[in-house]
Length: 499
Image (cartoon, rainbow, N blue to C red; front, side):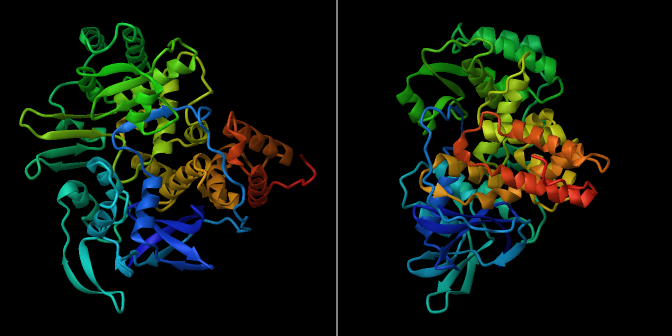
């Protein structure tokens, strides 16, 4: 039995489900039939994991206006009281062959094997699901574990060792590194504090970068001035971030322009306007665009270079496979990682840019970063997303709660983009409360009038909802309900007549 925190109840392809996160931030799903919570078939479980996953090693920028999917507003509206959902203990099982079977790495791989997907994508799915140290043979009459045997997973051994080590009730794990050079000849670095394990040279200078770009024949001359400008901005505004992985990538980086069909093949997305594919060390751009400061196309270049700047993979002198993955392992998702990357990219500009990729998520994280005092965009480069979650928990005094909020934000992104996925707006209230608590905590004080307090909330919502599509259906009334509760808690008299 494992401890989980409930994240959200949602509808997908006409069925109702609950999503949970365990103490290792792995997703688990159950079904709801006639109000009763049940285990779901392994095929449905894998389908849900795929819904929340993407092609491994591809980081892309999208234009939501290109092919926005509109949600069907026919899902019942629950009237739930928003609250920080408590943890509960669940035996993670799925229905396999008509039997409730404990969900293990082997069972999950068995379910994935029915899908014709590449191995790297299977590994990505596997690392998203629950893992345990032992595999169970289930008695079909009782659906209870009757025999134990050692579980093995040769295709993803390094990651599995990382996830399953330690006690089941171990606290939140911060991504650091996995050094398996003596066993599988692989080294994974998830935090720049351990980058010296991967690189045997000092931080390159700006001149080193500029010379490298000029020498690289795989970069068209058209793009070299933009990349040189990027490096200059990077050194000026972020002098202390780790740059050796970026220098390694620039040695072999290629930049290619492709048509929409080729872009779709590279990204598995109909909305992508640019992407960086790590295992190819290549930036794909849509052909026929001009890349001038102040344009969306210019942001695309900076966005993809910012991906290229953080992650690399190569063989060292001893023949070991080295993976520098500052995106992280213990917790990572597309919308949040892309949003913070978007904020980093535009922070390099010498002008203000509010029209940002992953607009709603970027707005949300921008407000957070302007509120908290223990995390900056320097930390985005140097650490994984789980470090961000850890710092949020420290700031708020929470116990591994930030990842639940990040997962909820990821779900809201899927909700907007998928016509087969929908959750009632009230499921996102904890997310709204989470942001409001931080923002109001910084900007309100008991000596304010209610009119002044409401002006603070007005300003927060103006920033949060800037250029956000109406189809997100953000319930702004809930923010003001939370404001009233907050004001009462700190002694500000609430004037209900103020609009």
